[in-house]
Length: 302
Image (cartoon, rainbow, N blue to C red; front, side, top):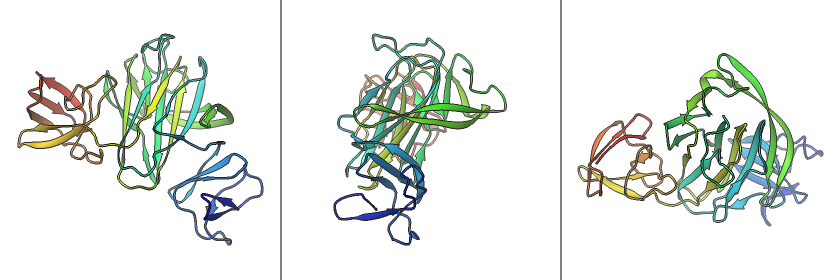
């Protein structure tokens, strides 16, 4: 048996904690537990997503609170690594902003060297997210790859790539073996080096509150990732007037849309604005914007 809190008891289907295949609410194991992270007292937790076991993680603290989360890599990488970050979002609702700087120099500045690639996946309950916006290129889905296709990512066909697992427990990285990932060439987007990536995850209910970020990196030098607690996105107005909402990159100004920002019709970041050209109302320095089919600003006119 394991506990999610002091009053609830759940059941697992194996004595070996590493061979568990499900978490259940009944002793006969016919009813799967709801989505979330379930912890044993010995530092192992089971991540249920979409009604089935999605991951087994080593985590003495299980998740770091979003109010303090902001992590970096543990060393210079010249191989393939999978970083796993469980983040507690608590009961608040709003848009969760994830900012990734996948390659930095020793001073912390974004760098285009060495050639590198990566993919960020976010899971919140039964919903998964695998697209984001680059500060230099705009929309990216699944893998970004700087300076062409970085090996061992495939330039054609598909390839099975081993990633060394590093699980964040709130204090340290713990090695978790190897995960093989099948990657097809169609899942790799050529991107410009030295970019920041922003993912927007809508959280519209108090639960589920546990976000799991899987960060796959290939030959990245140093990285930094931040997860902000749920909050309303900043807004501005377009002709109508109609209030819309947008994401920002580091250093961006809320209420002033910029190139490659996401634009949404709601403050939680659920619905992207339709493609089109929009005149702005009362926005300093911006008279109109062009939004593509992915909800990302491709042109800003002063």
